Image (cartoon, rainbow, N blue to C red):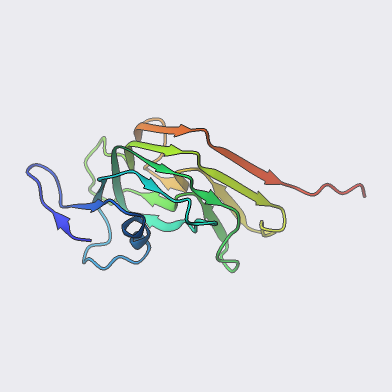
Length: 165
C-alpha cells in the first residue's frame, strides 16, 4: 500500500481490497500513528469465517461512504491477553497533536456485521470490550468523535450458559 499526498490533507493510504485492509495489522510504512486511510471501494469480508480484529487504528479511516460488509467474529484469537478488544479494530485512538474535531471513523458503512461468541470463548478474569467498529476507543469513538458512520443489519450475540446451582 502506498501513500498519496493530496493538497490540504495528510498523506493518505488507499484501501480498496480485503488484503489491503488486512495489511493494517502489520504495517510496512514508516509512521505508525496519525495516519489517514481512505476506502476506495466496498470491501466484503465474507471470505473470513472469523475476522480477527486489527489490533490498533492510530489515526483516521474515511470510508467515503463505501461499505465494509459481512464481518463475522466468532472467537478470540489471543487467549493470553489481559484484556480483549473485539471489533473491526481492537483499539483505536488519535495521536497526540491531532487537530480538534478529527474522528477515528467517518463516512463509513458496516453492512451486516456479526459478533457471535459464546461463554467458552470469553475468558474469565479479564475484560472484554466489544463493538462493531472497535472494541475500545480512547478519544476517538463517542458521539462527539464519530461522524457519518452507519451500521446496517448488524448484531452482537453472546451466549452464556446458565447454571441451576
